[in-house]
Image (cartoon, rainbow, N blue to C red; front, side):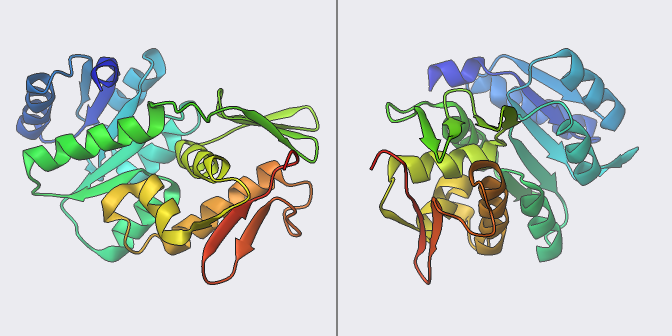
Length: 234
C-alpha cells in the first residue's frame, strides 16, 4: 500500500475548514501528494495541469455541482472519483454511482471511514495482479495492462469501473462470476443497490469488446446468477 500513498489526490470542497481537515487526515496517514480546490473552476485547473490519481468531490459547490464537475473531468481523465455529500437521498447516491463514480459518502462521516474508502478505491484501481494480461475476443484486443480495448483499429479506453469489472471477469474467465462478487469488486462493501448500475457498466463493456453487443458471444449473462467471460483461447 505504500506505493499507493504516492498517488496524487485532489480534494474538492467549498468548506475551507473541512477541506483542510481532510488534507491533514491524509497527511497523517502517510499520503503526501494532496491538492485542494474550493470550487469547480479550481478543480478543473488542477486536474488539467496535474496527473490526478483520485478525486474526492463534494456534490454541492458554489459554481456548479459535483455531478457536472465529474462529467467535465471525464473529458480528460479516468481517475476514480469518490463523492461527498450532505444529502443522503437515494436518488443522489444512485445518480453518482450511475455516472461511474467509485464511492459515495454522506456527511458527516468518520475520518477513519474516509481514509479506508480512499485506500480501498486506490487498491482496487491501481494494484495489479499477475493475471492482468492482453487477450482477444473474436479479434477484439482487450489490453488490461493499459486499460483499453482495440476494435477495428479504434482504441477505446476503459473507465476505472469497466477496468475492475472486466479484470474480475478475466481472472475468472469461463466461470460464472456472481452479481455480488462483481459489485463487491467494483464498489466495495457498500455495494448494496448497485445491481442496476452494474448492468449499465456491463452494457458499456459489451459495446467495446463484442462485435455485436446485442448478441454477445463472450460476455454472457447467466440468468439469476451473474456473468461469464468466454475467451477465444479456452
